[in-house]
Structure formats: C-alpha cells, structure tokens
Length: 79
Image (cartoon, rainbow, N blue to C red):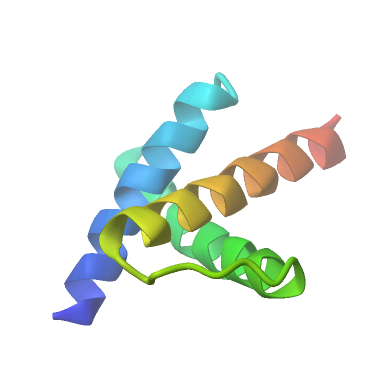
C-alpha cells in the first residue's frame, strides 16, 4: 500500500512542481520528479531539523518542495 501512496504523492508533487516552474512534463516524469523530490525534501527537512507529523499533507509539502528544487536545479544545469 505504501508504494501506491508514493506514486500518488509523487504524481501530485511533480505536477505542482511542473506548474510552479512553468515546465511541461508527462505523468510518468511528474511521478519520478515527485518521488526523487521527496527524498531531497526529506533530506533538507532533516538538515533543518523540521518537526513534521508525517501525515499525507506533510509528506506532500516536503515532496513538492524537493521536486521544485530538483526541477529548478535541472533547468539551471540545462542552460
């Protein structure tokens, strides 16, 4: 069940990151970006010592923040 939740959170986070960064991705790319973004966001949350409850909304916020950072860095490298 948690794998399905990863996919759902990844898809939503990737979609939000796509809209915020004005990118154009496929659904699969959004899911991948969101899942990788969740690792990036989780790492940054630990570094910043953020106390999160671990619920769906918290996970979505962390994944979205990480996905936005990932897309931004990718765009900067691509330039």
